[in-house]
Image (tube, rainbow, N blue to C red; front, side):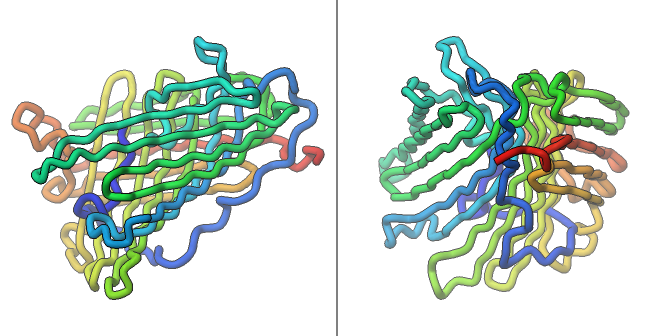
Length: 347
């Protein structure tokens, strides 16, 4: 699943939600539990809580293709397990960092690199993106840090990532981790067919907030995103997202929901400009979420009220037109992972 595209690269879209999102980051994206000394120091294998910060800069100040600066923050529960080469690999919920990297072991962790080549544009230029990530485990294998970067040439776009984490369980199964309580529930009606998933074993759970602003003083632009992501052990996905964009006085709000289960894959999107009441009322969204050193959770219901304004992007091709959502289709997920005794950890 590709990460949702920043509107600096694509037109904004979707939805009816009246929120004041501009200006400051929500609480809860900094800080980690203290190290639990009862956990094994033999290897980093286990479940970890991580927090990240991602920042973009544009070395080429004259570049007009993407004159924006982006800052994003996440909190995730993830797993560290040994791959076929014996490297203890960190798998994130953020799709940009879930791709097929080339890994090289180091004395303290590993390095990961990925080279991606885009299509040639009309002027004959081919963009190339180089992503690298260095993960370092502490000597006691109970904490880690990582530094990453993504540089695209020739346009000069650059993103840096910093990551910190602590091990919260020696188990590599969210179901069997004694230190954690995990819950999952999903109800949905998809293209008129109802279903539910009463239980699922997590692979990762995360909440992300991002903010993008222009670097050009004459422009009036701000974009924010709230993304809630769950992957299970078979990499089946549940995801919800809210986007907000204010550009030269025009406000666009977007809602989206993605579910991928044994029986169904669905991707719903609703995008509206401010003042488009019929469009704004075409999708209903209710949300409760939390994000702290105690854990992460989200309880979100997304419902299609009028499919005139709500689409499945896959339905835009003739051979998948049957995927157009029905009025009354909905997705309601309840996801939570909490640390049972994080207050008792010793420093």
